[in-house]
Amino acid sequence: MTMQIEPEIGVPMDDGVRSMDLTTRAQTATKTIEHLSRHGLHVEPNKEDEDVAARLAMAYAEDPEKTSKKVTHARAAKLTPPSLVLVNNILQEFGHNIAESATQIRHLVTNKLIEETENPDPRVRIRALELLGKISDVGLFSEKTEITITHQTTDDIKERLRAKLTKLVNPPETDDVVDAIVIDDEEIDIDAEFGLDEDAENDADIEAMADEVGEEVVGSEEEVVESEEEEGK
Image (cartoon, rainbow, N blue to C red; front, side):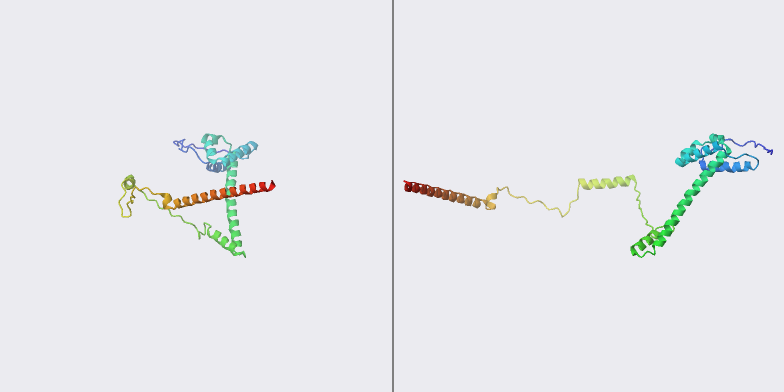
């Protein structure tokens, strides 16, 4: 089939777009390829097209931004139409699977919580109702945090610091301050104050009595020994 192509004069070659997400680029290219395929463009992929599409899809899954920057206009122009169509199909299916999986999990969790609201245990019922109320769609128990930010100029901050420093250097006089009481420099006999002198005298008397008793005991023992010796003679 013969195609009649009429070139447009004056169309700028550079559209100013330096980088484009690979998903958008593949989707746009696929629409063009579908239009051309209706006029006889061959889009049956071969093994090489499948390998190229698989590598691009894996690279995009690992790092979308880096992969999108690498697939420039010049490199995208070198890709075959079947490989571009395969890349678009893989990325579209990949995105739909993630969205469907997240939605299914959300519905599963919600349904399980609804079932637990009929649990015989009141603690389980209350917890299930609480979690259901915290779902974003319900928002019954949504926690709100209010943050108040007070904006101050540099002059205000300097003035506050200056006032604090002034209070520290020159503290204000108040009636709560009590002057210290000066005590005369007189020597205090601690032993006399606590009665330790009398205890010392008592200890001396006790020691003297112990010495006297000890001498008497020693003298009586000597007399006993002498009497026993005389009896033995």
